[in-house]
Structures are given as C-alpha cells and as structure tokens.
Image (cartoon, rainbow, N blue to C red):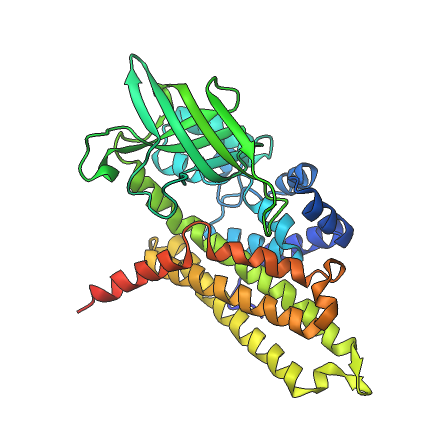
Length: 384
C-alpha cells in the first residue's frame, strides 16, 4: 500500500523492483553475505540506472529528485535483500550532500559526477574509537601548516572505508575552542594520500556486503582547498547531514521489514500443519496483521519526514521519529517472520534470519535509537 505517491514515484518503485527481481538472486544474496564483499558489479549496474544518484542534481549527472524518491529506491533495494540493498544505497554516502550545500563549485565538479555515475565510491568518517555517539569532541586533529592541513587520528566503524575513493572527515581544527564542537571542520581526503590507512572489520552480525572498516591518519597532508565550507562549522554541517541520511536509514528499515513480512506471508499460505495452511490459525494470522500495521505506520512516518525535508525544511524531530520507530519495527517484524517459519526460519536458505541480523544496524548507525529519543525528548521539553 502506497500513500499518495504520484505516477512518476510509482514508476521509480516499479523500475527498482524490476531491477532487484532480475539481479538480486537468492544465491547471490547468500554468496555476498558469506563473503563479506562489496557487490561492485551490481553497484555499477544500479548506478547506470540512476538508482544511486537520486538526490544529486542533473547538472552533476544525478537524477534531480528529492529525499522521498531516494527513500523509495532504498526501501525497494532493502526489501529485495537487506545486505545488498544497504551496500548499494550507501555507495556515495554523504559527500554529494555536504558539497551541494557547503562545497565550492570546483569541489562539486571534481567530486560529485564520478560518484553520481558509479565510477567512484565515497565514505564519511565521523565516528571515533572513544567517541561513538558523542561527536561534540574529536580526537582527530587538523593543524594548518603553510598552505595545507596535517591530519592525525583514527576513525572507527566507517562504511566503505577500504573501498572508498573519496572521504569526508570531521576533525578538531581548533583545539582551544570552547565548547570543543565549535572548533571542528570537515575536509575532503582521497585514497592514496600518504598517511591514510584503511583496515577492514570482519565478522559483522549483518549487512555483510556493506564493507565497514577503520581509518588511521598519520601526518596526512591535505591541501587547504580541501576544506569544505567554513572553518569551524564541521559539527553543524554533520548534524545537518544526519537530518537527511537518517531518513534513508528509516527507509532501509521499512524495506527490510516489508521483505521479511512478504516472505512470512507467502510461507504461511503454503505451509500446512494439522491439515491446513498455518495462516488459518490466529496465532499466525494475528502476527501477520500486527506486522502489517507496524510496517504501514513506519512507512508513513518515514514518508512524512522525507516530505518535510523536500517540501518545507529538514525537521530533526520528524527524522528522529522515523529512524527510531522504523528501526524498532524492522527488528520486531523480522523476529516474527522467523517465528512464523519456525525451525526453517533459523536456516540461511530461507533468508528471514538474514533480514533479522541486518535489521539491527538500523537501530545503531547514523545515531542510535537512544540518540533519536534524546532529540525528541529535548524537543518536548521546550514545548510550552
């Protein structure tokens, strides 16, 4: 069920679903989950069809749509397979968004088109080993020396760390600033720069085709032209970024829930016990009814946050509600899907266990559910 999507938006959903039906085979999904490798060939196919550049303007080789259309794509990708869907949806993570708002024209022309076309991969490095949810202080430092910046420090849990060509990195550029977050800046760095090292993290619970790693910077020299926007504004740029990217995480969660629900529904209609399909038993049918209600609610909250972002202005509370609620729904729905499958649901060949493993990350990355609730609580406290 889709709420007031126009013909063009419906066509976007249809096109992505057609792509996934053709390309996301069950065998491929299992293979990449086991190998923990990024599906580069699949990513390039998706990019050629414009699915990875929905929010990028046409002048930079993107599709010129908004966050809502991007969410439609992400939802369909993750509905087909959560691991492959997340990997593809995060291939040009954040760099186009921050450059479009705060970069100069030279930076935009250099970095955005290759990302839009799928020729390059991007990564955003905010999280640090000692500062997970707390980005108000950074141990990574950027010191100005002549006409370049020298960066030292480490970043952890970085999506695409080992495969990215281009990175944005948040650093403490003014160590004396009080409070510290007013002395943070964002820089562009590139693979191959001397002093940058990436290490792959293995053994993740889910989204295994989405490569995650650590970054270390040792006297990494960056040209002053690679500063994005104004010096000392990095913290604010980062919060602004999250207002959009967290909505797409909600779309990932809705897609995962929808995919698991559809598999459980089909199974319940064909699996027979005591001489009849198990959907005839209220213990199962009521589960499915609850699952559907939760998914529809999460989808509408996600659509509203995206609509507000595109049509009015970014709304941090709407975004936080969408992400926190959709993430919880994804966990609950995928859990119930396994229960409906019974023992078979515990096996990789039936796929729903993978949906459940992948769903958990939507409650953690791009700001934990607790951080989202804190945003909502702070808003409530300020209301008259």
